[in-house]
Image (tube, rainbow, N blue to C red; front, side, top):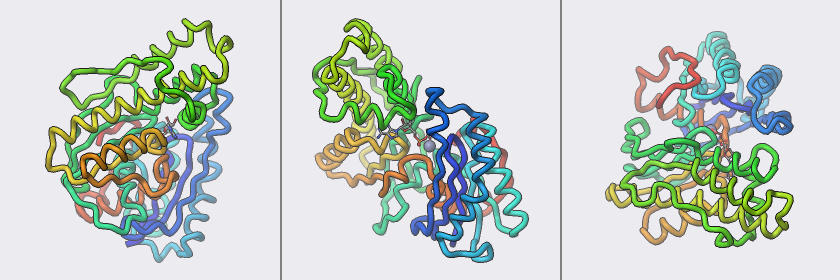
Length: 339
Ligand code: KG4
Ligand code: ZN
């Protein structure tokens, strides 16, 4: 079953064709991140204007890369939310028109359901449920216990900022450009994470929840107490950034550990979302999974970690196979829909 995926929830315009939820025939991503950089974050109006301009060319490229015509597709899957409303509407309105013109079923996909489906992309091994998914993005940080593609229980979520937000806000305290996660990680690379101690959020609490706002405040005070950014040497900046990055990743790992301890049937750990591209986090979870003898799966490519339409096409396929009657029905574009 060949599904055309369309994703426009934030600053990206992406279209992809995926066969049977795993074989990626194309995955085109056009990002307007550079246009937002001077503003320190995504400007919704600007994002939607760019998306209007490029959605049709991006979809055309996805079809031509896949070497397919419209009549060779079986369905369209589109992100219905959450995200920026005007951006979402560009994707869902375009999809509704295409679905009607080409008589293809249209599947509305929750953005997080897209992320948690990303480990299936290009995976040629069988994936075993029940599994634990840590979904870490700019908009959410959640731990899911999953018994099938569509049967899942939320074990914990962030009580304040998302992990990606913690990276982005930290990066802005270091005067780094948006998007901050990769920039902060680059600054932290080679730094000494023990130079400045950071707190352990929710330490000792019997929960799978997360909290990142305290870490961000600590970073603010560390920088202030040392005379501000201008007073720091390059090495000191690197060391402080490394400590901050390590504290975020350690916090994520303690919650994964807690979930594995309390759910002993878990066969695999998946880490997905933009922050799963972070190399410090990858190393920590790899070591943890090896020590616990649990299979770890990360998205096969960095472009499957951050927002992309291939994961939406895969998710659409899984929704269709597990919930046939529900999947291709009506849905609302909803900026704050829950999974
Ligand atoms: O999944 P995603 O592309 O979009 C959302 O659904 O939010 O995630 C974007 C987030 C941003 O906060 C970005 O700074 C963060 O993922 N991110 C990273 C890295 N790459 C992206 N954070 C830390 N290290 C990275 N290498
Ligand atoms: Zn995302």
